[in-house]
Image 1: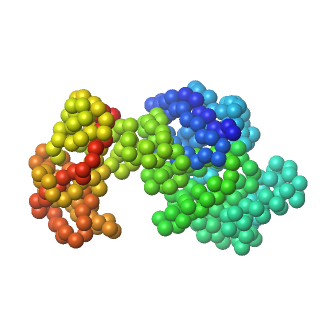
Image 2 (image 1 turned 90 degrees about the horizontal axis):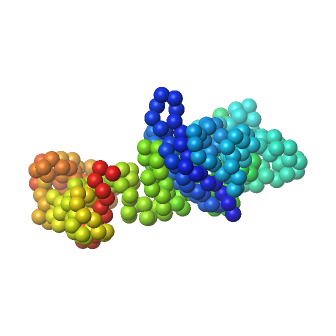
Length: 340
């Protein structure tokens, strides 16, 4: 089934640089896409263009196979959930959830059926008579999702809906949301600046950088093989080292390393903290030690002024100022073009 197609979308606000440039993506029916990017990367603008709250300068947006350019937001069949749960304060949870079906003119019996279904699915039946001010943050966001899904949108857009919640509640609601959407045919897009959230939600992951779609693929693909240094940094790669590659070998301050792909010339080597291990010929001075639960994150400064971060065992006590030897875990390293 067709879901969403965005084709070569562009958007520039008067007097400013382009916010979106040539963005093309698709989301199939029932598919979950996570869009990851820093503030200002164009995430929310993309959602607002798809929803009909902004008009793009170029390109096309198709929902269920048909262009929606020029179609008013209220007629696009797109549900949008924001960071703040926008519930009607004078209505109960049941009345909020019933709002969309009632506006659509559905018979009372169908309205009740949809509302009961969504209250059960969102575990809010006990709060059906409560008003928004009587709900917790998590309950209010679930009510906002129930109200949106009760209207049976053709597409669901989620604009960082969990970012205002504390971390444990955010994780629980994220798992609940994935389970909820797995039972729906509606395609969905979640925009976030949180890599963990993007990995947990998306069946596919897109990375927006500077208004362009820098990469899209499965979370595992994008994590293991980032298209650029910017994508790698956004996905948590803390060590981006300069190197010179000749074929499948790359020379770095950490020595000569085997590369996963063949390149020639200057490159940036992508190394995650867990790829740096105790021992090896590389030495440096510890500048920072941070407890990280199962280990400690150690920042080491080399003589050339570079800083590298390694994940170190808790058993070895480290203090700033001491000299440390470390190496690279055996295996091929990923490289990208420099300054990409």
